[in-house]
Image (cartoon, rainbow, N blue to C red):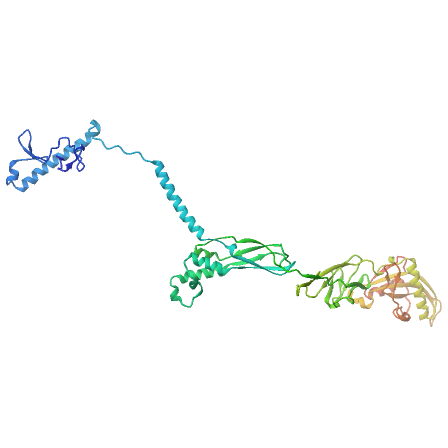
Length: 471
């Protein structure tokens, strides 16, 4: 065994430098005693004099050892400084780094981390549409759909994820038995209760088998975050099925439409004599006619449309349904009140003038002669006047007559024919009443046609006169 002559530490035979102090060991000596050139004894690489082991003081021994150690350290320092220059000092060669091994290890670690995170993400990921149920009710083409969550299934799956029992989710009376699971159980219940599925369709109540509806789901993101859940599947398409067939009954099958009056005050009349329904089961409406203060509708011209609505229950019941609920009709050929003198042809004027002349002569014996000069139409300004002759055809005459004070006087008079109409076949119709009781004429004569027309305007009529009429 060799020993360092500088610090005395044992040195392996193959080492050239001391591992403890770094001094060269090429001049180190073995552990046996020996004598140097000067006759001094050496022990363990350190020189000593004979008297050191035979009674010299310990202080001297320590002083000599210190001097020897200092000289050795100085020699070791010089050796370290000279070693790189003269090649006497060398370190062991570093082994090459295996980069592929390092990359493989890092990749394996990353893969393990990703796998762990993926498993955690997968276990906490829920496709909420998997728990959505849709129930269809009603009849084919008259069905409805509503959605709900299978709460029991979802709660059981969440409780299994967090290691909770059914007791944790259902029994809240004994809080002590729940321990730390109580908060988690409450979160699960709150999250499940927050889920709100809704069927989105514009055909609710009119769904048919094979129709498709969309369910959209809302939920509390706050509760999901507290549970560490990742929620997907907030939209689900569902095909409608299971709706029963229904018999359709047409409420208009035995209903007929007729009219009362004439244009522009034509009133639709619903006839249900051959039907299982009554008149009050139907209503009439139109945005093209006029309505009086009592809500009565009057159609004013040919081609106008009006809607008849069945007011009975149109929802399916007992396996049948009434449909359609509404039906549209159009005014076709019908009687039309005369609202303009130009609507009267020569035959019409002759018919009215003859009837009016007879009426005037029957009313007065003072008339000597009557000359027909034209016609005037007077139309009421409001539908509320329908029952008070909404339309009148006025036949004007120039008359010669006698009175109490003079003979051969000249004046103007007329006869009012209420509600004169042109029928669908083109003929003229009016109702003069029994013994002409509905006809009217003034008690006196007018000095001019202008005065006569002014009186009619004052009465609230819209006046249209033949262009031939003048004072």
